[in-house]
Image 1 (cartoon, helix red, strand yellow):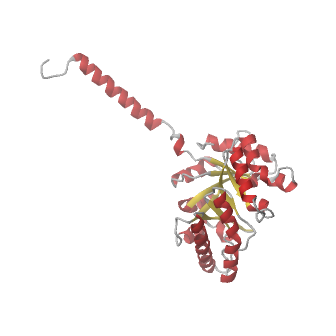
Image 2 (cartoon, rainbow, N blue to C red):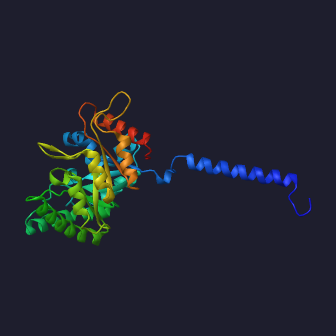
Image 3 (spheres, rainbow, N blue to C red):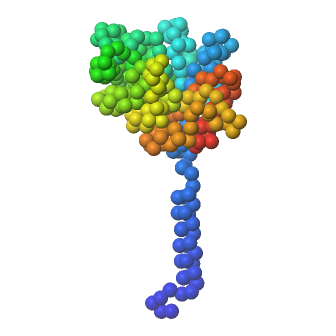
Length: 304
């Protein structure tokens, strides 16, 4: 037909349109691409009993995590390296161990170096200085952050002021080394999600943030904070997430945490960083408990 479209051409156009529509439908119904899935890292604390007993050398943690569980990223705990960190060549050796195992360092969890949020300014500054060596080690290992604690004294308002002041001091150290400073819900008011959010809202979000632990919302012996509420309140500031686990049922689900619900809160905040596997139970071996935590997170859309 002059000036029109022939039957053969019309059929071809219809086929092209239908193929395009199918492609759009498949894309919309498909799971998120792997590039958007949260990668898993392994928390060194998952094997704290083995390391404290001497059956797993802390320097072998990267190799063990890769060979036994297939992890490609690790999160260190300073407790296991406190006696080594000042030794010449220690950092370079640990970095080489990571490279040999094919894993990358994500962050260092720091304890026992003084209170970053202490009420006394001099004590805060001393704690900041104590953390400096771990900031330097994190940079050497290719990590993006260290985790600190915000234990303090006084009223909630006084503790907030101390925490903000201490985090600002820490952030100055971190910025110089291009290392972020993350505060975890780890007891006291830090396990109050609303209080933590109020602290973070006063800080520069580039060098400060939260490390959200799924289960550490135990304020004191008498008070527990709703952990789904706490996760939701802390996630807008999150630059680290720790998927805590203690025990599993026959279906492989964590008995005390609704993982799909927790992960929905994580993804609802558009968090793209690592999810740390941290098994802390007693019924299963550390290896088996860590494996089940890994597998549960893989079923919930994470990737190694």
